[in-house]
Image (cartoon, rainbow, N blue to C red; front, side, top):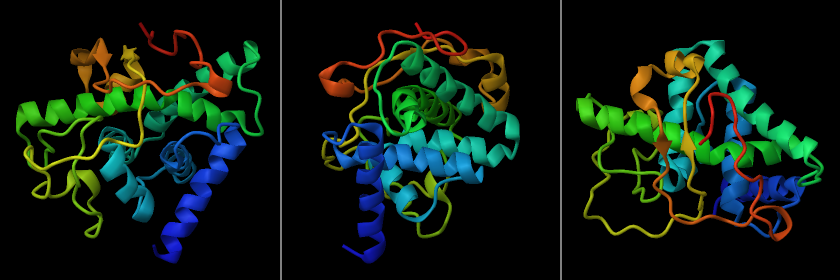
Length: 224
C-alpha cells in the first residue's frame, strides 16, 4: 500500500469516527469523504477517491461526475439540499449524536445518490451513447477505466466485462426508491423518465448504534 493509499484509508476511518460509526467498513467512510470533497471543490473525484468509487460504487461516481460535467452550481445545490434534509431529520429526531452530523447526513444520502447514478448509467446504456458504461450496477461493479487517463467512469469501459468475476462490494447500501425534484431532472438531464428509481443493492447496513437509521424520511422530491 502506498503512502497516498494509507492516508486515504486513514481519512476514511477518521470520517467514521466523526460520524460515531467506527464499526462500519472503512469503505463507508471513504464514500462519505469522496462526496464531501466533491461538494467542497465543486468537481469530480480524482486519484484515490475516483479509483475507490470505480471499484465500490460506480453509480455514485457517475452521479458526481454528472454534476461536475454540467458545471452549474444548481446541480450541486440539489445534492446539498438532499443532505441538508437528512441533517434536519437527524437533528429533529435526536438521532445519531456525533461530532459532525453533516457527514452522517451524507452517509444517509448515499443510497439516493446510488439510485440516481444507476439511472444515469441505465440511460447511457439504453441510448448506447459513446463512453456509456454497460452491464454495471451499483451493487456489482467491475473495474472502471482505472482513473489513469483522468476520464473517470465516463472514459473507456473496455476493462469491465459482464463475465468477469466480481467480489462483493464493501459499500453495502439499503434499498430505497427516489423521485427526483424538477431541479434535479434539469441538472441531471433526466427529464420525467427517472421517477420511482430503486437501488439494486440487497444488503442494508445497520444504522447508528445498532439501529437501522432514519425510518422512511421524505427528502426533496419525495422518497417513497
